[in-house]
Length: 250
Image (tube, rainbow, N blue to C red; front, side, top):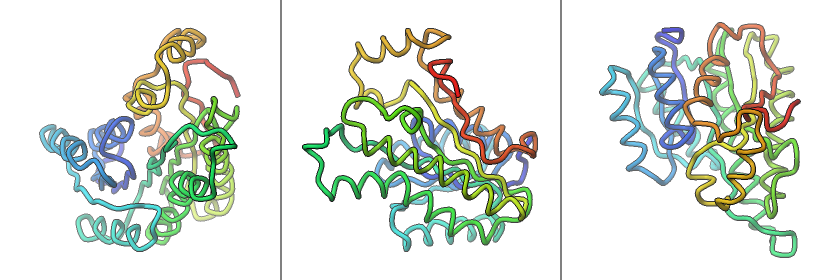
């Protein structure tokens, strides 16, 4: 168990990729603080699966775009597992809706940017004082952050591009303290995100364009996340790592 006794916070950790990340970190021995914002039933199912497998985790509801709720999440994790946090996975995020420029208003722009970028900033600011050398932060960017995204995804893609840049900046700033900061850039992963925002014919076309000729699985993203959180990635920082089946190369 490569993460034995380490403490991890996973924002958006209750379902889809977040669930698989929470399960994987717990299976590797981490004590996991699972954050969720709305879908309590899915988060409780994730917790149930972890405890049934002999792992250790807690749930905490928080809107991680709000600093007071971020502070509450960190406080709950400290109360459960002590004052040291070793791993932060900034996974909370979303597209909200596909909108072309003509249909965007300022509130929509702010909502998407806050959900994807501000959340990572607030969580990082709150957790870093509790991290020591060997700590790992894994942000979630996207292939959209590299290529601009699909139709109506301009703000989402922009926010994810900003996450990639924030990752590089934090890697430079926190590296002297021994804290590593990396990001994952998933491509077409089979999750409820694409069930909601991507048409079936688009999904089939994109999957067929990958070198592996399929969509990715959330568990495969979780495996890479666990690697970046582990000491096996001790000399890896500032990286935006593609997990896209060869759909696009860096």
